[in-house]
Length: 446
Ligand SMILES: Nc1ncnc2c1ncn2[C@@H]1O[C@H](COP(=O)(O)OP(=O)(O)OP(=O)(O)O)[C@@H](O)[C@H]1O
Image (cartoon, rainbow, N blue to C red; front, top):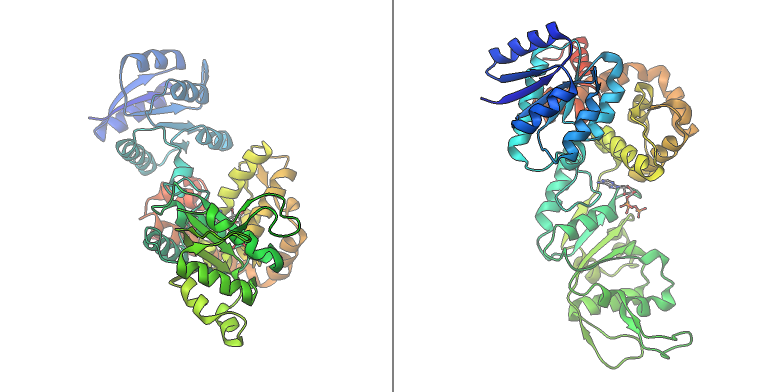
């Protein structure tokens, strides 16, 4: 029988909860303050800790910190009053498994407990809940989306990564082409070798061969030192050529030759160097069109395009938006040393309605700026750039219905994604479980 330590100073409420849990086959030990809970924790192992936020001798967060300090991996769930939700969210950032706000719905309690115990069974380490769920095992800053478009993308990445196929990544600016290239590298057998990104659009054509293949000291004016080229630097690993459509015809020939022969010769050298690289390229222009126009070599195009991946625009993966917004907020908080908790409802609606022409990069920038400007716990509309709020105003007259519809669809999708698990669906939507329950009722979702 699973052991739960329940810490709650409201005697009648704690007894009621204890009976309820015992009826559901849990063994419950009661404690009314932090002091006695700490003693109990020293002497016995529990599977779960359920603690009130406010206790007579301190806060549930103090206890949580102590538990984490002792490297105890027991999941901690906080119970809060409605007004304390923001503190509870902070607690989750400190490693609490979840929080549940009073008054409880019995189903909610059981669901949270099941989730916490399941999590405990599958992990031996402290749960860094939100982030580990979203990131892949290689620990890049790659958030896996949950929309259908993202799922296909993730599937392609997973399939192609362990091969040595050349990958051509296409997608609009800011959709994450470089992040995907890096993720492929990190999920490949070459992950311990270098990943060398090169922006082909930024290399003047006169020095492109020296950049790619290196040069010998004195081989041309200005060559004051030997220089290692990108191919050699990437040896054993992955070379990522961004904006590959910008290469001149002559550079394309040199590149093709190096890829075919797997050898490079630094400018001014007589010796060829063997190179073993995996090539990933990216472009936001239509390379096939360039091939048709004769500005991009067809043989090189096929050499680069052994496998192609198209990254969807952010608008095509609206269901991922809140997930990404949450990720960028966490990142901005860390970078700016702030602790903004989330977004107001109107901001989320604006985010969901906006076209995001600059894709994930624009979302990231908007959130970083808003985080910097926010003096309260939530990002509100007053810190959004005018292009977002203006487009909302013009859209507002005919979009209020679609916003509600949007919300309902988002909730249904999140529930589907989470296999009907309300806790996980609420997390995907970045709302509390309580709000999710209310909305399920409001929209009459089964
Ligand atoms: N899956 C993802 N998870 C987390 N962050 C992401 C993801 N995809 C993109 N980003 C972030 O979005 C921003 C843009 O990504 P990136 O530079 O890879 O886009 P890009 O398509 O290569 O852009 P460009 O075409 O302008 O070179 C970066 O800040 C990146 O960290």
